[in-house]
Amino acid sequence: MGSREFHPTDTVVNVKGVKIGGGNAPVVMAGPCSIESEEQLMSTANAVKAAGAQVLRGGAFKPRTTPYSFRGLKEEGLKLLKAAGEETGMPVITELMSEKDVELVAEYSDIIQIGTRNAQNFMLLDAVGELTTPVLLKRGFANSYDDWLNAAEYILAGGNRNVILCERGIRTFETYTRNTLDIAAIPVIHRLSHLPVVADPSHGTGRWHLVLPMGVAAIAAGADGLLVEVHPNPDHAMSDGPQSLTFENFATLMNGVQSVAPIGSSNRVPLRAQPIGV
Picture (cartoon, rainbow, N blue to C red):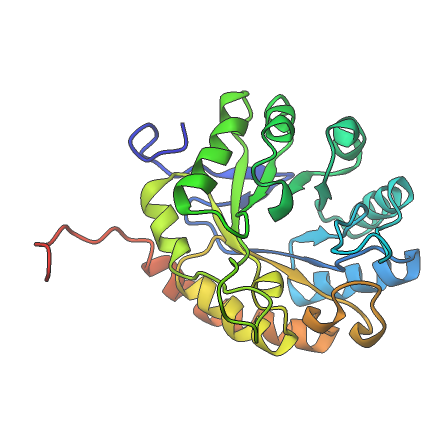
């Protein structure tokens, strides 16, 4: 169902009037990795909206490498996120981690994010496939393109056609970056699938100073949008501070996105076939 052969034209996911995919302007989803307080979330929401973000992101349930790290405010975080979205007029996206929380997260979120650790949690994918709420499916950190696209099929087969794919980097032998952001995945997946493709340069690099160049590169390669972590004071963030942008740096990123968006649009034009080796 996700292939170009099945559906030749681009799918556009409409989230409260924000259109993702289909050659529309890139959509930037931005906000804190973890919702820490109402003040932290609202200041970030207002800042990213002022810079041009269209969707507010914020984590209420956080998967962490160690169980002793901050793991989110859970339902209280969801309530804060929904309130911030309503006050700023932005749709909101947050991560779902467990089947038992599907109804709860769907109640508060406009886009449900399935993270890399659950990219092949097929029971969870089945569950969100039964919803109409848009789902952003991140690529698993060890997924091939086929693995990733087949994971999306679980959601599509359940009846939910509002699927957005997110390239967020894969694990390689390189240790300087948190992951290796696979920019080639963007044009490849656009060639293979009609689904929108966005990129997450925050998790894709793990270093704030790489978010701007890799985010802009993803847009130039034809990405339909970005997922970016922003925090009022990254040095004191309760999670993922090293990869979070300050408000000022996020505004700089948005300027870069706007400047290369026409290049990304032109790169979505299909190339004519040519002989192998040419």
